[in-house]
Length: 435
Image (tube, rainbow, N blue to C red):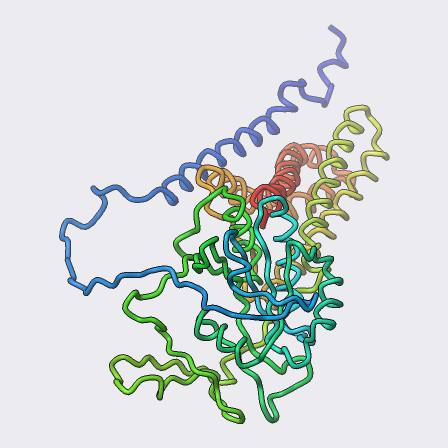
C-alpha cells in the first residue's frame, strides 16, 4: 500500500455523514417527544386524574334559549323595502357599519365579502345594516356595495329610520351602538358600534355571534354556514328564557356620555339590569393594513426560497463547485435574514393592530395536534439556526475547512427542517385552517 494513503486527511465517507445522521435522528426524536407532550397537553384528563373530593355547589337553573329577531322594515340600496319576513326560509348573516367609518368598518365589510365568496351556492344571504342612515342613503350604499363587488341577490345593504335601526341593534341583537356627541364626534368616528357578525337561522332566530375582525372566528363561521360543523359553544347566542330583553338596553340621550343606560327600564329594580359603557371604554378598532396581512405569504415564500437554495448549495458542494456553493449559501443566509425581519414585523404589527401577536389554530382535533407538534419543534430549532449558520459561514470564509465541514453537517439538516416546516406551518394555518 502506498505511503501517501496513510497520510490522507479525509476520513472515510461513512464517518463524514455520521454527524448529519445523528442530527437528523435528533430532529426526529425531538418531534416524537414534542408530539407526546402535545397529546398529553391537549387530551382531557381522565376521571382518575380528577380530585377525589367532589364539591357540589347548588345553583338555580337558568333556561337559556335562542333569541328571535324582532320585526323590521328597512330600505335596500335598490330602494326596495325589506322586512324580516323577506329573509325567512333561509339562514342569513348580518353586520353593522357606516360608510364614512375609518375604524373597523372596512375590515368588517371585507370579512363579509370574503365570507360571501366562500358561501356561494349555499343559499345563505348576507345583510349589512348602516348605523348612520341619515347619511347612508340607498344611493350611498349602492356605491359602497359596488366597492366590495356585492351581489345584490346574495348581499343586501339596508338603511332606514335611525331610531328603528338603533333600537333593533340594541333590543333585538343586544349589541352596542352609540352616536357620539360634542368633542367626541370626530370625522369618521361619529358612531361607536359592535364589530360582531350575527348568524340567524331560517326561522329568524339568532344562533351565533362572531367577531368580524378575528379571522379565526370568521373561518369558523364559514364552516358553520357550509354545514361542516355545528355552532361552537363559545359563539352560541343564548339568553335567559324568563327575560324578554335581558339587557333592557335603551337608546342614550343626546349629549350624554353614557352609551347604554337601563336605570329606568323597569319599575322593579330586581328585574332591571344596568349596563353602562363610557365613551372612554369604547376603543376604536385599528384596521390591519393589507401589507401586514400579506406578510405570512411573503414569509412562506422566503422559507420556500431558502429551502431550494439550501438543496442547491448541498448539490453544488457535492459536485466540488466551491465558489458556486459559497455564493449560494451566502444568498440563503441573506434570504433568512430578510425572513427574520418580515417575521418580526408581522408579529409586532399584529400585536399593535389587534392586541394579539399571533394567530391561533382552530380546534380541528388530531390535525391541531400535528400542527402544534410541527410548530413547537420548528420554534425550538429555529432558535439555533442563526448561531449555527453564522458559525458555519464564518469558518468557511476564514478558510477553516475542517471546522466548517463538521458544523455544516449539523447546521444543514436543522436549517433545512426549519425552512421546510415554515412553509408547512403557513399552509396548515392559513390554507387548511382558513385563518
